[in-house]
Image (cartoon, rainbow, N blue to C red; front, side):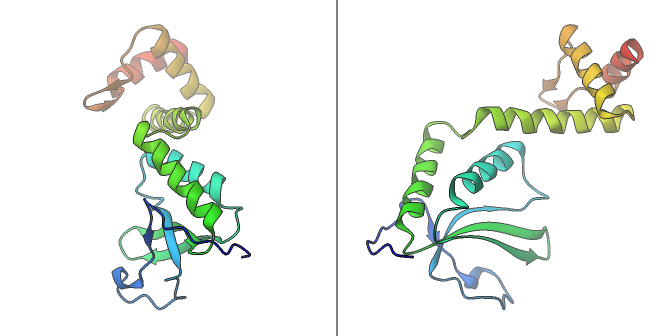
Length: 167
């Protein structure tokens, strides 16, 4: 790292091994945590924003993509930025500023992830392949079937009705 200026990030906190009981790995206290995620637990918005942070920061000087084992969620991933990596720290702060105005950093990516999750759900519920799930979803859209509602996604009854019409 050749950057000599300093920058105190507004939205990032320093990495601390103190909040990880029994952590015995590398000391990364010279790093800030730009973003954390537990892959098995994340919602589409968290997943999309994680991917944007990764895309924007991962190749910059002083950025580490770290993974820590965790007893409850399997593992946690973190994008860490060295305290002297001013450009990366500034970019991470800019991303957080963008999220204050609108929580979705990349709408196209977010909707793609949501759609993939919905198709996974339809495949599982209808016991069909991906192409058949797409046909079922298209039929539902074309016949004004409610896809999202307060209780969750489309119900089994609507999936079965759509499946009987298109397959």
